[in-house]
Image (cartoon, rainbow, N blue to C red; front, side, top):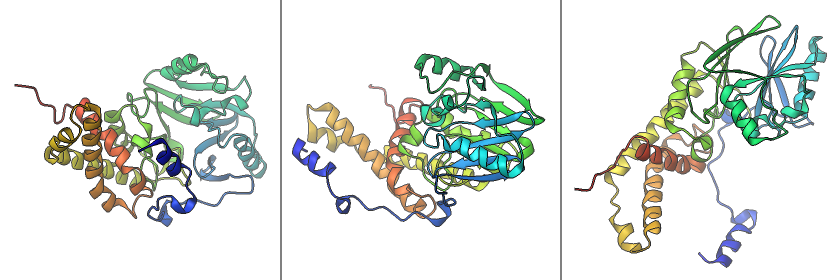
Length: 327
């Protein structure tokens, strides 16, 4: 495609853009208020906040408010949500603790909006990565843990756990046992397919294992960090099945799709041949999964091919699937 062709394609009108399957009603969350957020009760004194794309949560306690992540797209609406609940419930609106799920800026980039004396808590790798990144919007946590840590703040229990790398090397499980809630960010998007490359995941084997770890906990409410509604156990199970079906389809496609035509077509242009073959595997493997999950998971038709590519690369590179040793 020429530069002019690319420019024409990227500057088209809305009418020229591709159409996708309708979003199932079950994927949508509550309406936002005039300020652009929704805050609601999860259970008792645990609340969640969304702007329709990102999610945060907070726990009101006798010692202050514990904030779980601080997405910058919600930004100052985090404090507005806390203020709204504090006024309605007659409790303090002072944020005293902030727990990072992981180091990514899209989930922690509003951390600096809160006082420097807020106690920030996260995994030890989160601290290392935030010190490396040196982003003033995300002060590194003062308190860290390695594998497990149980917090008791104002009489409320929060269990933190790290089971190894998944979405990122530092992404943790946040369990609130007295509120029947698990928070696990960037693994399952309730009601929706993962965005690009399995939610931009760094470790596909850990990503695929994470839902089983999540389901081993007792909980009813799931906070996944994205989009407009809370999740439940059925959402996590559906995501597991989607990923299992996709992996199975990729294996079958690797076994059956002949790479020869790509290398014949492109000759000495080795990268063009490789791209053609790998894209071909991704698209062919994604097709039956898209057919199955359209109407069950929003945007299955938008991002499944991208996730298929990333899972395929993990199967090839992490597990050696389809690898052949030259005789």
